[in-house]
Length: 157
Image (cartoon, rainbow, N blue to C red; front, side):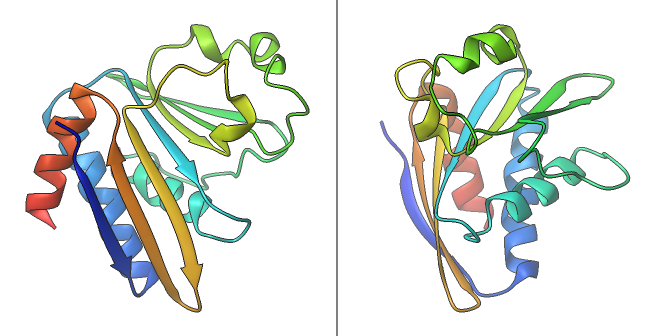
């Protein structure tokens, strides 16, 4: 069963609520490994969503965009969150050099299409499209883990 739904987020507060709700259900399920792919044009809100998602796990301080570092890891007591931005990759093969493919954890990957053919399949795919202040998020599960999470998230929103 694939879970699909769209959300229109009319403000940054609604984006924060959506990100925190997804994080809450990952914590309730005690997931240690989950791949969330974020697609959308520049300025669509991928990094903003990621910041609120990461903060929901209790990470304090600034959440840096991984545009130049490519990967920002967040080591928590009970899990690892890996926030990656693949925009600057010139080839999917570069993922092997980054070591990202060997890492277990909660992955937030911006621009996953840059790793096509090398990245493993996502559990959840978020396609973001900004129109003015409103952000439309097309949410699609890509695995049994994603199905279960998104069913709970959708019922909770």
